[in-house]
Length: 113
Length: 383
Image 1 (cartoon, each protein chain N blue to C red):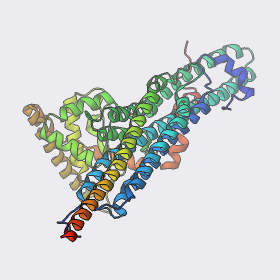
Image 2: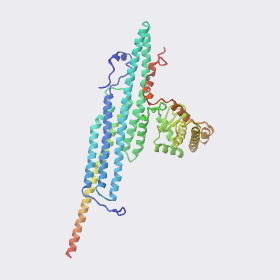
Image 3: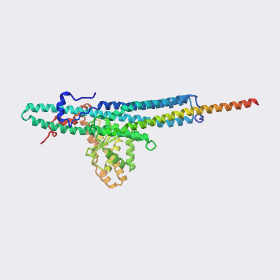
Image 4: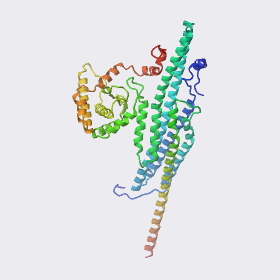
């Protein structure tokens, strides 16, 4: 197929694979977030107050919240992307089906003549 | 779980306990650093998985301009995950640096206590009559030395761990309102912070922890005002040059280290932002030349001539920036009329000659914190 003549050509089912992989990636990210964030919080928390770490703790206090928001945003983005991919698969499938149907109708009409 | 004070030192510790806190949280914090690294790994595996999911659409034989749109729109997610991984990595690294410095602190305490113990024993052995007075003086000297050392460790934690955390937070914040700020700018900040932290223990000539962020901000604000300054900033950014604004009082001995790709600008505590900006432009011009740190071969004169040419070009560039800023006369006076202005390369060469190599640095640098404890010098208490 030449690059100047770019018709849309879809392979049935291939998008569903991508979609499932994207949502798997989102799930993995979410699992990682839930599993590791609690551990990561330890980096900034101490039982006894300590002069050497005061400043570090003050800066770190905000960090886990930011991580959760930012990573949560990424997870949502990936899920959206996966949904869109499976939607476009459905679109193309139904469009193809409709085209086939009208072609059948046309042929039937021609054969009747 | 953490490193406990050796029991034989407990008694001595009680004499200076106020000045020698013994932190016990490093294992918990290391656990936290591991968690942060895991977060980075989760982002990276998500990135590669999503990348393969996107590539699959093309690979399985779909064709069309609609796929280009799909792939393009994905690149944003890709960068987002990249930034997330980077932010977590920086935070994990910063936590580790923090733990390292707390461990260094504990080591300093142990060394100080050993030295104090030896002195106390010696004081009573040498002169039992004066032993009480001598040991009292020694304890006070140790307390002062520990207080000073603690200040230095705190400073190192601030530069090595607190600044990177700030940079990591900047990245995450940029991710959260991506419509306003491009994350890649924050990435630059984060990488500079990391580079500043880890760039080298190798050269005695360069202290990566000595950097004045306020001087940097002010100088860069001035640089942004002129075309010459903007060009210099862009060159430094494109070539990954790290700039340190250091407290060394002599700005004329600022230099560019081609091995480390670091510009060191002195006088950041004293000089005006305009002067620092001028020096930055000078050093960037010199950096464009990528000079050798020492003369090659027997005849050093070509090397010196080349250095003089560089200094002239650098002075001219700084003069251009100064006159674009509107200080034509002052810039002419400083950079053009004074023919001997600059000379960081001589300083650099001298230091290169003195440099003892990585081994010496590793064995020597912790003693910077405790050297007062090993001689009866200025740190001894004087009534």
